[in-house]
Image (cartoon, rainbow, N blue to C red; front, side, top):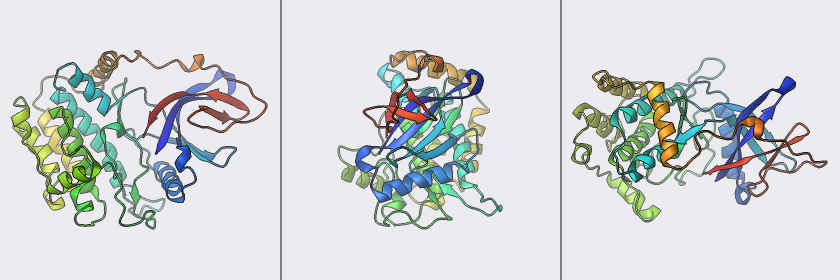
Length: 335
């Protein structure tokens, strides 16, 4: 739906900072529904100021009137690639680090669920698209939730047709499909439960060969016992994941904070460190196994190009105008 590039912002006295620039793919850039979702992402994201949520720096339009987002750049990997690096090496992802990533993800989700408007009134935001690609882990060991493009802010009118299902098919909560219920904290917790189950098991839970079958699997919600796949898991940890994956929303945790506390109780009994330092080290090792460079290209090596005519940001051209200077971008993920 959108492409993300790494870019730089430049200021006085040689100031330079890497950022991410996101824009709707060309084929969708004139679709009013996707444009409104993009605008909603900017509006909601700008109000979510939390260390475990990717921050929005700017929002604007290019020379052709297409919208773009300037966001915090996270140097590291997403949770999907982190998990794949273990799977491809023939290992299980360390459960204690997976639990720590879950805890930090829940901090970000809780901040969105408890969001308030400028007057202090409750204005919860539900992500609706918690997937491995939207959980970012930095080389500094900080975990951040990204991409609130499908978020449902309760203080806005519906921005999509009610019959449309938003979110990756293998991660959407069953009540959003079968029962037609609204998104909630519990639907986000279900999605995170799927993500954590898959990281621990090293395989997909509901994803099938096509979207229709994936959705049927979600509605059936048959979840294999994690400890049959990972006997090394503490029973309490498996119980937390399975509770988050309950078919009925009211059988799940009441809030992200409650699930966070349950995972924290599991880690209290672990001798291995689970703070930012070992998480960051695991990201560095994951990048090595994936064949990625140890670090991204330093910002100062992104030499600006000059042009007498502004050019729009496009997936093909990879350019973005910042003041009068065109800055080359490094192609990033598409999602």
